[in-house]
Length: 87
Image (cartoon, rainbow, N blue to C red; front, side, top):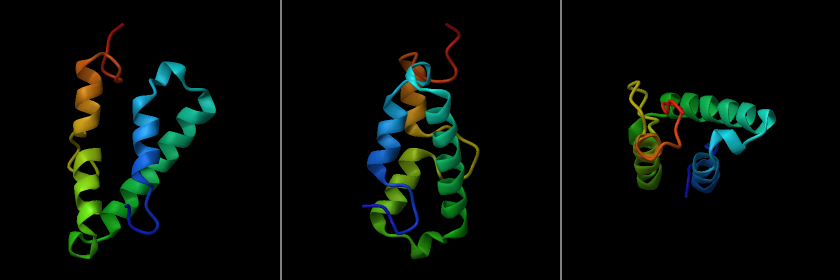
């Protein structure tokens, strides 16, 4: 369960599993805004105040704010579903 004021894990997973090529412009814009908002919330909330599940969720989704791809994005890129594919 995600902490209050944070994007739910199911929403994150749902948007991450659907390829960008199958999303409307509005969906892509919404994902972008939600992602930036959640990242900002992650930055503002000290790790000591996050629940255990939120710390794990931030690690998996790449909200550690160290400019590294998330594990999920790395997996998507590996199978050609991410933004780094050259198809």
